[in-house]
Amino acid sequence: MNADIARIVLTEERIAGKVKEAAAWLDGKFSKANTAPLFIGVLKGSVMFFCDLVRAMHTPVVIDFMKVSSYGTNASSSGMPKIEMDLSESVSGRDVVLVEDIVDSGFTLARLRELMIGRGAKTFTVVTLLDKPARRVVSVRADFACFEVGDEFIVGYGLDYAQRYRNLPYIGVLKREIYEDETKGIKR
Ligand code: IMP
Ligand code: MG
Image (cartoon, rainbow, N blue to C red; front, side, top):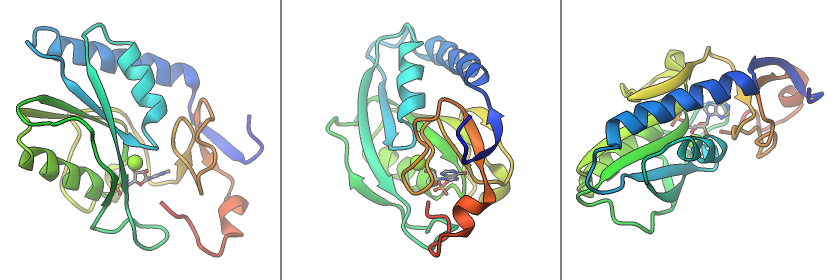
């Protein structure tokens, strides 16, 4: 285990098992669709989940990415997530599946839902690896959430602290001293 991690919350095996379930759910939903659904990965946090998820599916999909950053103060995200990189695909008239790492305050998801509906998506489905309902500010929910987590800051399998720990194969809680030293606090 990485020396900066205090406790593992989700092991690699548990994540892999649940990713298969999410993929099966998506196959059930889209296998009979006439056109391939457009899977949108929200960078950077969802990359590990996104790649494992689409590879576990049997339904042909089209993939695209966008980068969204929640500006604002340290420990909490702002209400105005900024689109830093947009899609290259058009969403108009398509089945859109948004793949998120975590739904926390809900600002990011609310913003992306509004954006995709506004651009004319035929359907909009949200799959998230993690759901942190205790911190919700905007009332939004994913159609499929792999795991519900408590109100603690976690890293790994895509999730970062100051851009680090994304490549851990499991999800864990960071040791307190790692972020207590930082003057900037937890930047999300
Ligand atoms: P939102 O608050 O729902 O808009 O989520 C914004 C983003 O905050 C998520 O997509 C994550 O990138 C990040 N985030 C929220 N909670 C955590 C956490 O516990 N660890 C790492 N990143 C987090
Ligand atoms: Mg994110």
